[in-house]
Image 1 (cartoon, one colour):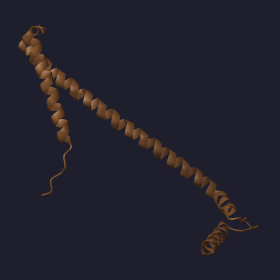
Image 2 (cartoon, one colour):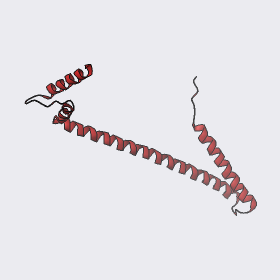
Image 3 (tube, helix red, strand yellow):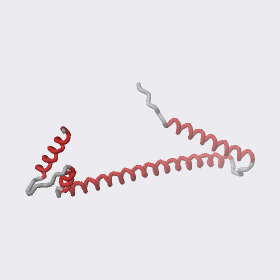
Image 4 (cartoon, rainbow, N blue to C red):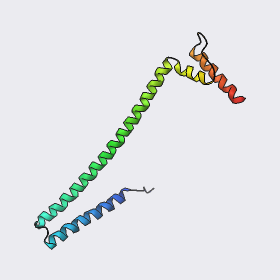
Length: 130
């Protein structure tokens, strides 16, 4: 069976180091007399510190996820607006007129979009072969 590359091991190790440092800090403070809590209070303080750290990690992850979603929504909105603008131009035939202008062509009287598109493509093919 193929073994997956699990990057969460790094998070687990960092979490274990933080937990060990917090426990050692609380024990050191209790043993040196700087902390006037009882031993059950020290144990509950350790649990409280771990819960607070986990809560901060969850908040940070949610903030990153929200930022990514907002960025994606904004990018999608811009693309949709550009497509709408292009469709509005296309509905009036202005896109073909601009494309024809690039190749020194102009729309003949009563010429359809299809005929103008074919003339543009013909001009492009001729330009490529010469």
